[in-house]
Image 1 (cartoon, one colour):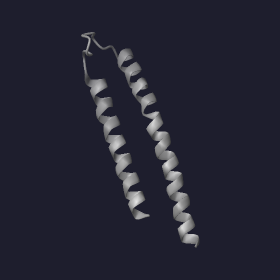
Image 2 (cartoon, helix red, strand yellow):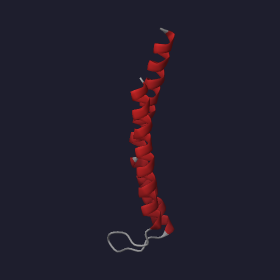
Image 3 (cartoon, rainbow, N blue to C red):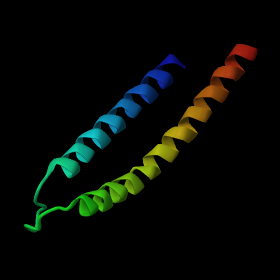
Image 4 (cartoon, rainbow, N blue to C red):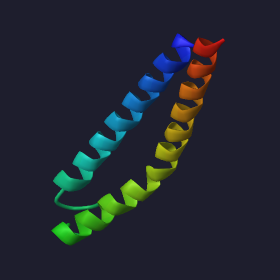
Length: 78
């Protein structure tokens, strides 16, 4: 069971670092790939799209957390 928790934490760490790096890239860039100057509104829209894309992995991680907690409680009860 400890392996499952360790893997869960490492996976969460990976997603948080990836989200942080991509968010910083979006927020700190002045010009996007097509050469258009990025306004704060355009950066915010790009960030919201990124957040929406990361919603799916966050839901999976939440379900995985519930499964880990339930499995851990079953082992301590028995």
